[in-house]
Length: 342
Image (cartoon, rainbow, N blue to C red):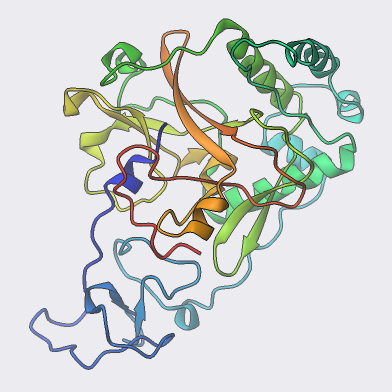
C-alpha cells in the first residue's frame, strides 16, 4: 500500500499570528465552535485577527499554510467558476491527440479488453486489473473533463497524466524500484497492458467515468459518474518527482510517496501542486472512526512498472454511480492526521 508522503509527515499545527510573538492570545476562541480549546490548532486571520480551528474550517485545513492566511469572510471565497463547456477548449486543455470524430464512440480496444477480462472471471488465478469503462455519451464525457478542468484551473495546476522530471529536482534515473525498502511488487505484463490501454484511451479523450465536484466541507472531491467494478484502474497518481529531503518543510498536503528507500536521501515523492491530474482531488477517509473506514472504496498501491516506480489508485470494491471516492492516506506509515476528516 502507498500513501501521500506529506500526509505521513504532516507538520504539527502551530499557533501563528502577524502580531509580535510575545503577545498574549489566551482569550482567542474559534469563530465556528466558540471554543478556545486546542490553542495549538487555532489559526488567526491576518486581516481581522479572528480565530479558527484548523479542523473547524470548511474545507478542513490539515496544516498551517505558508505566508498570510485570510478567513472565509476576509478572503470572500466563492465557488470556482466552471471551465467553458466548449469541445475545442477542453480538447486543447487536455492536449487530446485524436480526431473530433473519435469522441462520438467508445474505443474498440476497451470492447476487446472487456471480452478478454470476461474470460478471466472463471479463473482461479490472481485477479487481474480492469481498465475503466468510459461513459458512452460523448457530451457526458465532456462534462466530466470540464469538471476536472475547473478544479485544475481553480487550484492553478497544469494538467499532466505522467510523472514529470524537472530541472533542480530528482532526475528520472533515480526512480529505481530496486531501492524500495523491503522490495516493490512488480506489475504483471497483462496488468501493464491494461494500464497502457487506460493511458491510450485518455489520450483519445475517452475519459474515466469520474466527476469532480465542489463540496463546502471537503473542497474539491471526486465521485463516480457510473458504476465502477472492483479492481478497476481509476487513475495514476502523477506530478513532479522530487527527493523527499527537498520537501520536508513543505506544507503541501498532496505529496505522495513514490519511493520509500532504506537510505532516506534516496526516497522520492510525487508533487502534484504544479502539474497533476484527477488523483490530487480524491479525498481520504477518517481512519479513526468505523464510519470513516467504511467509506474507503479505493486502494493506493506502488508498483514496479517496467523498471520504474509508479503509484496507482485502484477500486477495492464495486462502486455505485454517485458514490464519492476515498482511500486511506495512512495505508503505510500511519502518521497522517485524519481524525478531523469529514
